Length: 128
Image 1 (spheres, rainbow, N blue to C red):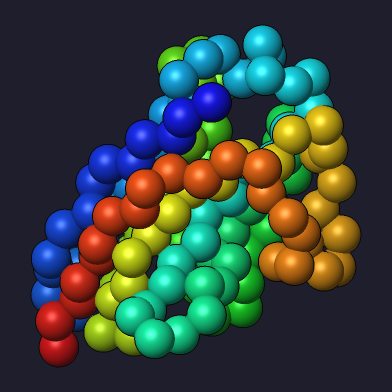
Image 2: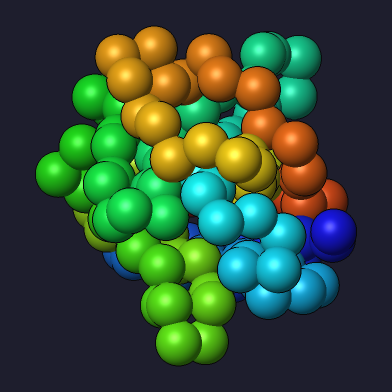
Protein backbone atom coordinates (compact mmCIF):
# COMPACT_ATOMS: atom_id res chain seq x y z
CA UNK A 1 0.00 0.00 0.00
CA UNK A 2 1.36 3.39 -0.96
CA UNK A 3 0.11 6.68 0.42
CA UNK A 4 0.50 9.88 -1.57
CA UNK A 5 0.19 13.34 -0.09
CA UNK A 6 -0.46 16.63 -1.82
CA UNK A 7 -1.17 20.23 -0.92
CA UNK A 8 2.01 21.23 0.85
CA UNK A 9 3.05 24.81 0.23
CA UNK A 10 4.61 27.95 1.63
CA UNK A 11 2.13 30.43 3.10
CA UNK A 12 1.98 33.44 5.37
CA UNK A 13 0.93 33.21 8.98
CA UNK A 14 -2.84 33.26 9.34
CA UNK A 15 -3.48 31.69 5.99
CA UNK A 16 -4.99 28.29 5.29
CA UNK A 17 -3.95 25.13 3.48
CA UNK A 18 -5.65 21.86 2.72
CA UNK A 19 -3.55 18.74 2.64
CA UNK A 20 -4.75 15.60 0.91
CA UNK A 21 -3.74 11.96 0.98
CA UNK A 22 -4.80 8.99 -1.11
CA UNK A 23 -4.03 5.30 -0.91
CA UNK A 24 -2.92 3.14 -3.84
CA UNK A 25 -5.87 0.79 -3.36
CA UNK A 26 -9.35 1.10 -1.92
CA UNK A 27 -9.31 1.31 1.86
CA UNK A 28 -11.98 -1.37 2.09
CA UNK A 29 -9.65 -3.78 0.34
CA UNK A 30 -6.86 -2.98 2.77
CA UNK A 31 -8.74 -3.36 6.02
CA UNK A 32 -12.33 -3.29 7.25
CA UNK A 33 -11.28 -1.25 10.25
CA UNK A 34 -8.60 1.39 9.90
CA UNK A 35 -7.33 4.69 11.18
CA UNK A 36 -5.84 7.44 9.08
CA UNK A 37 -3.63 10.06 10.60
CA UNK A 38 -1.61 13.15 9.90
CA UNK A 39 1.79 13.58 11.47
CA UNK A 40 4.49 16.19 11.17
CA UNK A 41 8.16 16.44 11.76
CA UNK A 42 10.59 19.29 12.04
CA UNK A 43 14.14 18.52 11.06
CA UNK A 44 16.06 17.39 14.11
CA UNK A 45 12.95 16.75 16.17
CA UNK A 46 10.74 13.75 16.74
CA UNK A 47 7.75 13.20 14.56
CA UNK A 48 4.51 14.17 16.26
CA UNK A 49 0.92 13.23 15.68
CA UNK A 50 -1.41 15.97 14.55
CA UNK A 51 -4.83 14.43 13.98
CA UNK A 52 -6.44 11.12 13.18
CA UNK A 53 -9.74 9.79 11.97
CA UNK A 54 -11.07 6.27 12.17
CA UNK A 55 -13.16 4.25 9.75
CA UNK A 56 -16.03 4.74 12.20
CA UNK A 57 -15.78 8.51 11.77
CA UNK A 58 -14.21 9.40 15.08
CA UNK A 59 -11.72 12.27 14.79
CA UNK A 60 -9.12 13.32 17.33
CA UNK A 61 -6.66 16.19 17.49
CA UNK A 62 -3.62 17.22 19.42
CA UNK A 63 -4.32 20.26 21.58
CA UNK A 64 -1.92 22.46 19.64
CA UNK A 65 -4.07 22.20 16.48
CA UNK A 66 -7.53 21.77 17.98
CA UNK A 67 -9.86 24.44 16.69
CA UNK A 68 -7.54 25.30 13.79
CA UNK A 69 -7.16 22.03 11.91
CA UNK A 70 -9.88 19.70 10.72
CA UNK A 71 -9.35 16.14 9.53
CA UNK A 72 -11.85 14.50 7.23
CA UNK A 73 -12.22 11.51 4.98
CA UNK A 74 -14.09 11.77 1.73
CA UNK A 75 -15.46 8.25 1.82
CA UNK A 76 -16.64 8.33 -1.77
CA UNK A 77 -13.34 9.41 -3.25
CA UNK A 78 -11.36 7.91 -0.39
CA UNK A 79 -9.28 11.03 0.05
CA UNK A 80 -8.02 12.04 3.46
CA UNK A 81 -7.89 15.78 4.05
CA UNK A 82 -6.38 18.03 6.65
CA UNK A 83 -7.83 21.52 6.52
CA UNK A 84 -5.45 23.86 8.26
CA UNK A 85 -6.54 27.36 9.17
CA UNK A 86 -4.90 30.08 11.20
CA UNK A 87 -1.49 28.70 10.36
CA UNK A 88 1.39 29.72 12.59
CA UNK A 89 5.13 29.65 11.95
CA UNK A 90 5.38 26.81 14.47
CA UNK A 91 3.23 24.70 12.13
CA UNK A 92 6.16 24.63 9.73
CA UNK A 93 7.12 20.99 9.25
CA UNK A 94 7.09 18.07 6.92
CA UNK A 95 3.62 16.55 7.03
CA UNK A 96 2.92 12.87 6.58
CA UNK A 97 -0.24 10.85 6.27
CA UNK A 98 -0.35 7.36 7.69
CA UNK A 99 -2.65 4.36 7.78
CA UNK A 100 -3.19 1.99 10.66
CA UNK A 101 -4.94 -1.21 9.67
CA UNK A 102 -7.25 -3.58 11.51
CA UNK A 103 -8.17 -1.04 14.15
CA UNK A 104 -10.49 1.92 14.44
CA UNK A 105 -9.66 2.53 18.08
CA UNK A 106 -8.62 6.05 19.06
CA UNK A 107 -8.02 6.01 22.79
CA UNK A 108 -6.41 8.56 25.03
CA UNK A 109 -2.93 7.66 23.85
CA UNK A 110 -3.75 7.56 20.15
CA UNK A 111 -0.77 9.70 19.31
CA UNK A 112 1.50 6.84 20.37
CA UNK A 113 -0.15 4.17 18.22
CA UNK A 114 1.90 2.43 15.57
CA UNK A 115 0.80 3.04 11.99
CA UNK A 116 1.47 0.51 9.28
CA UNK A 117 1.86 2.60 6.15
CA UNK A 118 3.32 6.04 5.61
CA UNK A 119 3.45 8.57 2.83
CA UNK A 120 6.62 10.28 1.71
CA UNK A 121 5.66 13.54 3.32
CA UNK A 122 5.50 17.08 2.04
CA UNK A 123 6.74 20.40 3.31
CA UNK A 124 4.50 23.03 4.81
CA UNK A 125 6.21 26.31 5.54
CA UNK A 126 4.51 29.16 7.35
CA UNK A 127 6.25 32.51 7.25
CA UNK A 128 5.71 35.11 9.95
